Image (cartoon, rainbow, N blue to C red; front, side):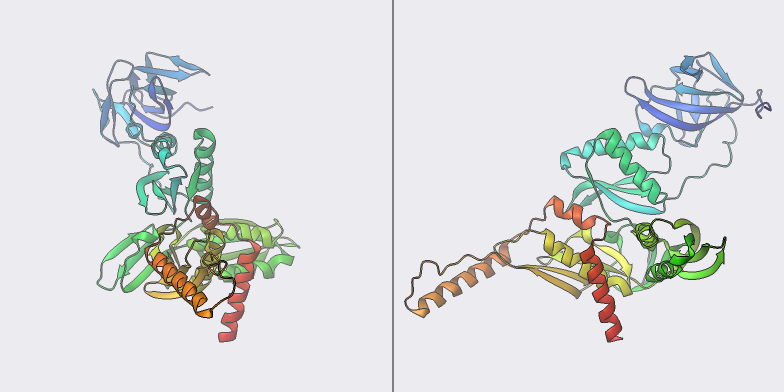
Amino acid sequence: MPAPHGDPDAPARALIFDSVYDSYRGIVTYIRMEDGELHDREKVHMMGIGMTHDPIEIGVISPDMTRTKALGAGEVGYIITGAKDVSQSKVGDTLTSAVRPAAEPLPGYRDPKPMVYAGLFPIDNAQFPELRDALDKLKLNDAALIYTPETSVALGFGFRCGFLGLLHMEIVNERLSREFGLDLIQTAPNVTYDVTAEDGSQHHVTNPSEFPDGKIKKIVEPMVAADIITPKEFIGAVMDLCQDHRGIMGTMEYISTDRVEMHYRIPLAEIVFDFFDQLKSRTKGYASLDYHEDGEQSADLVKVDILIQGEKVDAFSAIVHRDKAYSYGVMMTKKLRSLIPRQQFEIPIQAAIGSRIIARENIRALRKDVLAKCYGGDITRKRKLLEKQKAGKKRMKMLGHVEVPQEAFIAALSTGEDSNDRDTKDKIRAAQKTEG
């Protein structure tokens, strides 16, 4: 094995490659020494964030944490500074000596760029501080995770999180659940859009609530190059799926007598929702998918709002292609109609693009039999009772407030597609073909 590269006489430079949080000693930072030497009694400086610390302990792992006097070029070890703030140890940063600092940080490290965004909200709002602390600790050894506080009228306090992709998002959710015992609601994943309004203003949109109102001049969305390998008998099913998700076919080649590799260019927004699940379903689990970033392109996208009793519910808003806006509106209104409990008054559930309603469902009112006490007699008496009930329900509808239960949010925001949803989509496609 060749000796490690590095100049032992140069100013100290060490790469931070991992960090963990210790409840008693604070942040334990793992480093790889590239140049020079770090001693346990000299101050260290983190070049990326500009912080200076007095180390409490320096050591190596062999295999347990073993304290040493110094770390030299080529060694891998740890350093404990006593810092409790997780933002003070950033993976990828360069550590140097504050006494004899290096002139340049180590090259080659770039901040990761999130591709997928989703909201994370605790089911119990009292768990918000626990969610914040859990994300802080995950950030220690996951430099790609970014998050900012977010407030939703429907879901309360939470965080808008950025992920590298779907797998990264699932891993973070699983770790929050298993390691920290948090029960969370995750909103539908979104990608980033660059929106140019009619007045020329630019908007970087990661959340439907950030989508500007008024006329839109141009919307640019990220694209991916997708490589799909499937048995040849499923070629037609895969082509239909990609076409439904606005995919543009590139090439197709046989890699064996019974397996085909298909190359598509697909909007990332179509991949992040349920594309992989549908691909596995249509190919009986035999297809595989690999994709990578492939530039951007303009698209005809709109924001679909869901209104319950005339009020927008921000958690259900979505940015979709104009051709899919109607199907999304019908799917969400039907789903919510079956999830929201009935009230004493009729509840309208509407899907809207701006001020235009594109889909509507009604939850029928619970009806009390006001004629039960009438054992016959004059019909005018019954009419008066029915008119009085009608007026009361009208008044209740004007003043009533609809509480959407948490179970409805969880079910409505789930990416799974049941048979009713598929039937609805089939009916919509048939209606659109008839109209065409």
